[in-house]
Length: 395
Image (cartoon, rainbow, N blue to C red; front, side, top):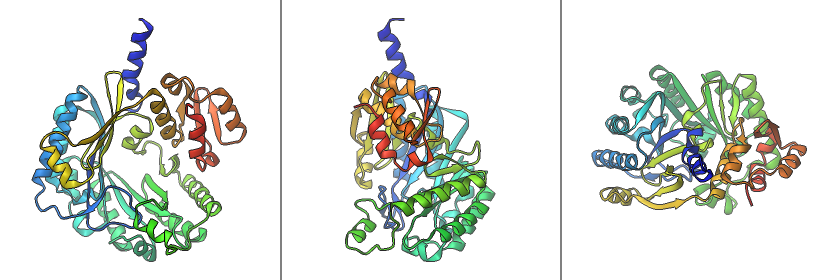
């Protein structure tokens, strides 16, 4: 096979290393949390039928561009997807099954809040085909739930988890730590309780103050005291990893912990640089068409997106990713994983990625470790991922 044809085949099939997924963004919430920088809007949707039709239309439009795929996962994110009706969820799932083949073990996740109005829909979601729920618990401390702007209390969170466990075999929940005035002893107690509840997966995020959020404005005005410094944040992370490991939950990704086999298959598609179609307001995607890979971005504002969907023009950006950008993304995402990245794969995308000189240097610094063609960040290296990516990605 001529070199040029071989290279095109490599580029055309690289996404298979990560798989293929569908991300569905539901942008509506009952309230905007002060730490949230996602595309979410406090807005009632009295009639979901136009939204279901628009999401299905977008799904079919993308299927024409990436046909003949096996769909490994579907993820309903937001916003608050548990404000979707079961009929809307069912419409999307049914359409996805007509345009792509579902993997035998397809994972279908829906994010939910622990509110009674939402958990009442759990059995209907299960009937529609959802087989995994991710609950936004965020804290098991009443004071901090209020600080985080959550509308539920601790008992509601536990009740929602119990209901979800009856409807779904796979249930994960999120917690935020390194919060205002939180001590290591307090987090040890809270995490211990979470681990006693958890079945096989937890998402544990350090609180970050993102630009554009209410917390960002509050912090700039000096109204967010008691946040940990870098050293204490590192101690929080080390404690989190050690406690989870002791309970059989490995840190398969920087902020995600699971028992073997319970990892989020959808998120692994992102981190392994697979392809995914993103539909809904503000949704991002990565799709390979021929040997070219594109980054897609949909219009953010819900009503604008809905109007655009009628003409098939929801995308406000479609960028052809250069080989340097593809390699950088692979390294940036893959180093978050405990399995790391493959040197040969990164260099196929760009020959200056993961140079031997830099690999030796960071290995000597104790920030990465190597095994054959695999390079992974150490626990200490995960605290310095931005630096590692900047140095190991192609210049």
